[in-house]
Image 1: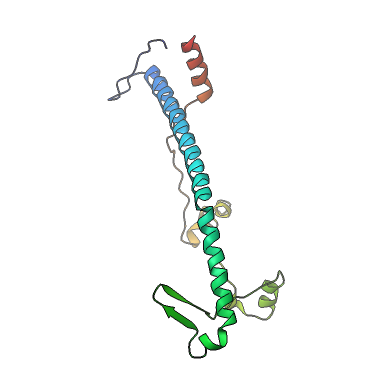
Image 2 (image 1 turned 135 degrees about the horizontal axis):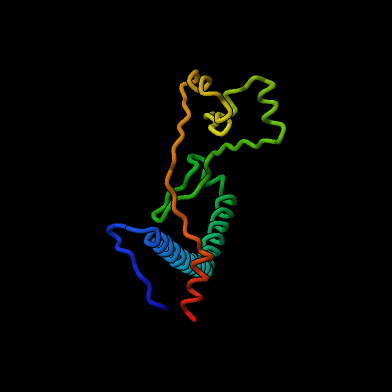
Length: 170
């Protein structure tokens, strides 16, 4: 790589310093992306490996649970005449009453039609995108206001940085 002027990080004194700082941002972002990609790759590999290692154990748990359920079903009359749960020194098994609601595509409309609005979950919040169409006066009437700001940004041109890296490598 060729030698290049590195601006003092205490203060940028010229447009060239700003340009070089943007280049440094782009290089740092590129390195971060590579680090994140490598980490994600390792995480995926570890998850795959863990899933493989745990496969026999998960299968064993499922098999034993099915056997316990079969035993409980076969001996239901004797084991569960007084309680729904049998407690043993290494754990417990039994039945729990659960309630599940199954709905169809028509359920929501029928709930509305029957005015069972308390059974409909709705998340209400201001739609700020739609509110951009309101006048300032309308915004004031609904206790809102438009705030316009010049937010600073800086964006590295990764394509140019890549070209520069290729030039420097030659």
